[in-house]
Each structure stands twice: as structure tokens, then as C-alpha cells.
Image (cartoon, rainbow, N blue to C red; front, side, top):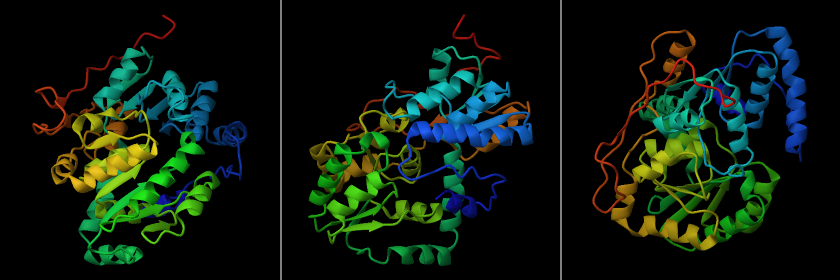
Length: 368
């Protein structure tokens, strides 16, 4: 799946860790990552290490650098749910990475407030999220090329033009078991509607693929498809009426495309879009998922309010800001412009600009 992204942006990896194995535990993955990364650091002798996100590989790379006293930059710093088990293990991973990072590249003012509140030692910057850089490049490529759009749409030739599209993604570890069974029950019930068609690019993890195929594979109004390359998935999101997901990245991407999002989690580390009214948490209870989707399909005003293209996560310049910070140049930090809520939507403060707080050259350590 990673190779699809590299091909899309014409990138070539200098090293491939090749550590993923079937039925792998987090502990065995962590051990394999340490063993794979160490000789690469011996060979490269990097001056700095940049890690992105909150995966186990990002955490191990950061810890490996810390053990060697190599400065660390964390892209997507400061995301927090407040619950160390949701998402699991990502919440713990990102806290560990932030604690030992020298540069904290926070996507939003809220995420910077989190790292400032924890009195971390790293220097923080509000950069926006690099996922929006990638999304804007991809969407512009699709929108400017009619032949490309038609080629991408051929993958979705099964769609009926008269029916609105519900796009579903789901892969989180904390939803394995009962969570995915509840999700499948909700989708099976929603599939009975004749004004809706469900498209679900199914993750290859057996804990996802198994129950989804078993419970939804024979339903005529549910289209289970293989994981999509990034270009194709962006096109699918463009065609969606509503997106139902447990993904962190989709919570950032979909609002930028003007698509309402229902999140199958109880908490989120991305509260900005919830405050903007484009994202709503529905959890993994069957009835809550059904009711959330029905509301957006049946209430046109609610859908219009939720589909306003509010982008609190970036302006396409996050990567440039990160480069400026690493090179020691002044950083023109990201300031989000949020739309004013309509009277029937959630109340916000009168000033809808989320302003970054000034960063400090050095913050006191947690031990002080």
C-alpha cells in the first residue's frame, strides 16, 4: 500500500525496512523495527531525523534517534485525545515522540497549545498539516485533467448516478472485534435504502477483511473494493455525499473537499473540524451510526451546514514551513480561517480565526 503513495508522488525510498509479517504483535513489530533501523543509522549518520505521525514505526525511529542523541523533528506534533487507549497505540506513540523531539511541527494552534501545556522542551511551530499539501496537489491534478477524471471514474462504473454515495473506511485496532461487528450491522441496515449506495475500500488486515466480507460481501447495495491508491481515493471522496470513517487523515481531508464526516470513534485528536461543524463523532454503536448517516441523507439543511468547505488543518504550505524551520529561517506560521456558523449550527466565538500562540526558543523540561 505504501508503494502506491511513493509512485503517485514519484518518490523512491532509499531503504525498505520490510518488517511487516502476518499476525504480528505490536511487541514483535517494535523489536523488528529497532533491529532494522539501527544499521541504517550507522550507515547514514544523519544530522537530524524527521518523523511523521504516530505509528509504531515513527515512535521507534524517534526513540532510536534519541538513544543516539540525534535531534528529532516531529511532523504532526501535539495531537491529543486525552485517553491513552484511544486511539491505541497511537496516543501513547505520539506522546513519546513529542517528549523527546527538538522541533514540534504542530498542524494547528490547538495542537500547539497541547505541547505548550505539557511544558515540552522542543521548539514548536504551527505549520498546518502536510496531508493538506498532498490533498491539494492531488485534487488540482484531478480537477485540471478531464481524461484523468474519466479514467479514475471507470473504477467506479458500478455506481448508479441517481443514488448518493456513502464512502466508508475502517481499520483502527481499537475497533477490532465487537466494534467492527457493530459497524457491519449498521451498514447492512443502511444498505436497505434505495437512495444510497455504499462503497467500502476494505483494509487488508484480517481483523477487518474477515468480518466485513462475512457480513457485507453478499449485499447488492454494498460495494466492497480493494484498497485504492491515493489518487483514486481522493476521486472517490470527491464523489461522496457523506464519509463514514475511523481514520485520522480522512477527518482532515474530507472537510477540505466539502464532505461531511461521521467518525466511528468516541474521541478524536482533531477537534477543530468538530468545532467547525463538518465532523461529528458517532462511535461504534450500531444505532448511533445508523442515525448519524440517516440524518445527513434526510436533512438537506443539516447536510449543507456540514458540507461547508472549512479547512482548519492547512493551506498547502506546511512542507515549506517545516523546511524553513529546519533551515533556521523565519517561519510564517499557519493561521486557520474558519467559517462563521449558521444560526442552527454549533455556536463559536465571534472571532473565527484560530491564532497560534508565540513559540519560545526553549520551554522548560517536564522535570523542572
